[in-house]
Image 1 (cartoon, rainbow, N blue to C red):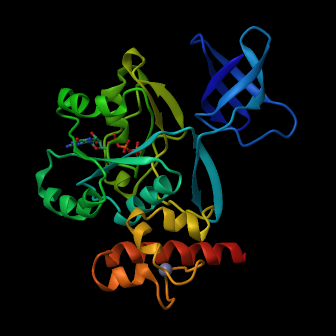
Image 2: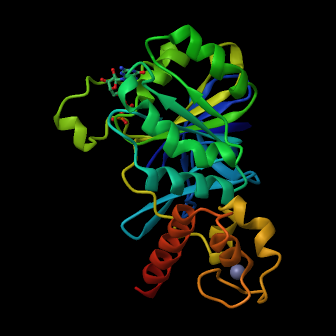
Amino acid sequence: MKGRVISAHGRHYIVELENGQTRQCYTRGKKTGICVGDFVRIQPQAEDEGSIEETLTRKNLLYRSDEMRSKQFAANVDQLLIVVATEPFFSEDLTGRALTGAWSADISPIILLNKCDLTSGMARAQESLEIYRELGVPIISSSIHEPEQLKQDLLPLLKDKTSLLLGQSGMGKSSILNVLIPHARAHTQEHSVALGTGKHTTTSTRLYHLPNNTGCLIDSPGFQAFGLYHLTQTDVANGFPEFKTHIESCRFYNCTHLHEPGCGVLAALKQGVISNKRHELYERILLENQSATRY
Ligand SMILES: Nc1nc2c(ncn2[C@@H]2O[C@H](COP(=O)(O)OP(=O)(O)OP(=O)(O)O)[C@@H](O)[C@H]2O)c(=O)[nH]1
Ligand SMILES: [Zn+2]
């Protein structure tokens, strides 16, 4: 029997079969590393259980790391839907990292600028996202107080795809999930002052179907860190699509684009074609990865 992992807790998984039924599954022996979104082959056990025998070839695999630990957390993702908001203001660093993670895995991102009803932070948010707009990332404004508009803008982009919903705590990710998939009953919590520091309310990653089977949405816990330790230097550079054409003119094939003479990326940076902020983020990620591998 074949199916797709829709949730994972330790070594226990819920697998949805091709006929729509779900089974509690587990792995035998040392088999690990299965994650939400994986397509698997299972051996039925008992009435509604099964053992996972094989993970089918993945299209891609997304990781998120914190404190030096890399965790794979979603597989076979077509696009990243990253939620940012005006209040509390989103982290530019985390947003940049999530986008790099997506691009390096060949996943196209969409940014959802939520809480547009709170107009005071809008100009600043738009300005901060301008760089991504220039890079061709669709930026959709939303408010959960306009649910019909939200669905109209978003559902066509999600159609027949597996999208990963990602965002820092408090941006409105759970509220958006509730609008898109009412039965998901995502846990929405009133944003208290205490929550302003970013308490996690979604604790596990879970795959949901959009109404009428028009696509899949993977919800994931709010994040406060987005390390990219699993990426090599070349992967990180691939996570900066605006570097691509300039890399072609680097003198050295193994150029790190940090200090080398004849570097096309540094030349573009100097000319203002590549933004300082973006190059600084690139440098930060590389330096972190270097120090992480030393330990
Ligand atoms: N004004 C306004 N408030 C919103 C909007 N979306 C969400 N909120 C509020 O923002 C707070 C946080 O929303 P959640 O949906 O819990 O945020 P979350 O990103 O899922 O946060 P975690 O569950 O902690 O990861 C709640 O008080 C929501 O009511 C919006 O579009 N406009
Ligand atoms: Zn270079």
